[in-house]
Each structure stands twice: as C-alpha cells, then as structure tokens.
Length: 151
Image (cartoon, rainbow, N blue to C red; front, side, top):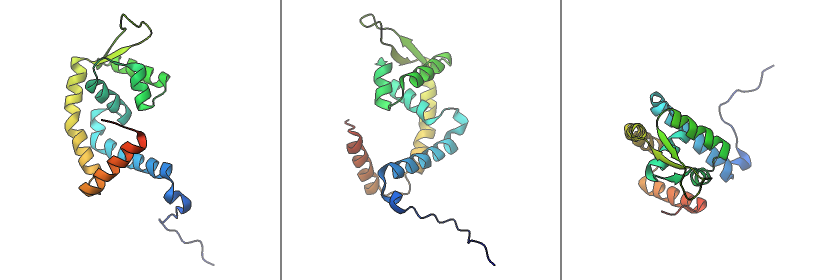
C-alpha cells in the first residue's frame, strides 16, 4: 500500500483568476523581499510608506494620510506616536482646526529617510526584475487606474 504523493504543486482553481488573491500574494512577495533587503534598517513597509509620504507632503494632516494609505485611525495614531517618540516625526495642531494634527519629518526623520532610499531603490529593482520594462509600465498603469491614483 502506498501513501499519497507529496508534491509542491498546488492547484489554484478559481483563485488563479481572483484579483484580490493575486494582489495579496503579490504583496506578500514584495514584503518578503522588503524584509530581506531592508531588515537591518528596522522599519516595516507600512512605517516606511508613512515616513515617505510625510516627507513628500510636509504638513499633511494625519487623517488625510490615514485615509490615503487606508490605515485605521487608531493604528495611524499609534504609528505616528511611536515615530514621534523615536524622534522621526513632529506633530502640530494647526490654529485654524484644533481637531487636526499636521505631520512633518524631523531632521532625524529626514536623515533616516535619506539613509533608507538607497536600500529601498535596490529592493524595488530586485522586486521588479521579473517583469520587462513594458510589463512593469502596464502593471503600474493598471494598478493606478484600479486604485484611482492620479499624479
């Protein structure tokens, strides 16, 4: 009597055509490479995204950033408080709206972001090496359309 054959192949069935499933696996693959290439820098992908967007948008309101990145308010608050405690971000309350919080990189935050740009660009290059330039352009265009991202 023989047992079942062990194989590494997994049939995906209808999941092979599921946009959400494919996006999730793509995200996990990208994060795997992010952690491999940037593990020594001590920052997770979500934190890096927050730091990068604050750097690109000095004075951005915390709620606006949370909505753009689809991060729950409580999680964003925790993350920003930790970044402030680490000296990476400053928070200010604008005089015209006491309910809002504006975010800026501190000098230390700007330096940390600058230090991470090189490894991030290397990650992006490695991560996207499976696609031709034309395929990459098409994928980015389609994802921006799907997400309604305008530049």
